[in-house]
Length: 91
Image 1 (cartoon, rainbow, N blue to C red):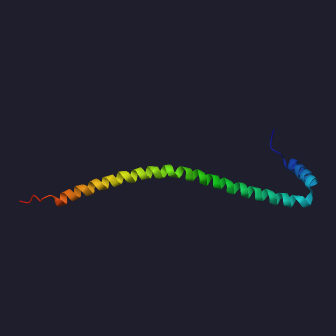
Image 2: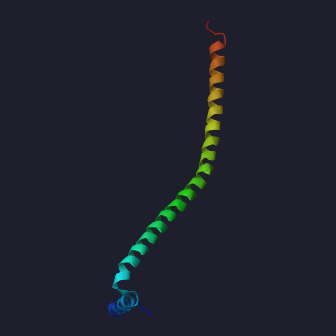
Image 3: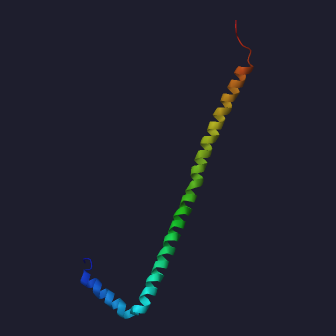
């Protein structure tokens, strides 16, 4: 089974023209175009929903990193405060 040759396509076009008529074909093409636009927008919407579903997992990982960094900064601040309040050992 190979692909259709130009002669086959011409026969298909003639059969479609005879079945639907030249008046209904533009309406059918418009309807098909609208359907394709709707399908495309819905597909993009689903992809956006999927990305949003993955986003909380990313944010959770970033949240953990920020908590770790905040703990490090608190420890560093406490160390600096101890150093600042400790009596100096100058001779």
